[in-house]
Image 1 (cartoon, rainbow, N blue to C red):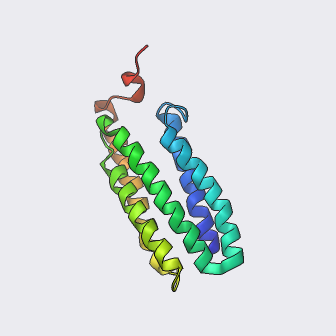
Image 2 (image 1 turned 180 degrees about the horizontal axis):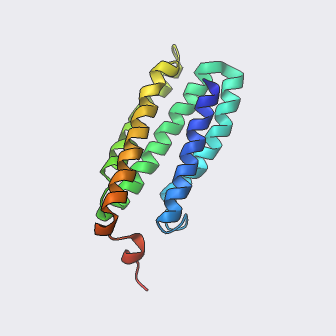
Length: 151
């Protein structure tokens, strides 16, 4: 379980960097920049927390990360809503923030195992896929960030 909990924020960091590069770069997307940094730090902290406190420590770190990443994702989605295709990012961010609060609370009791955390990851993957598909197939109809910038 520890390996999966470390890989999840590492994957999120990579996804944020790739998306930001395709949307004007990390400087133009401060929410994604901070989200990527938070996710990288979380991956390192997750490994340490799991080694020291087992599932409870890892779930606590995971919950704090889910809350912060969700808030950053929500902010990015709201900021880009005029580009279209951001509804999935907004929903995913709100769900992640709420799940983060629940995970933090659970970490002080009987920490959930992988079976209880899997739906969170599954919905995150689903929203990521839906956003990617929407933006891929609607790309010709949507303005890009570069189109919105003034010379």
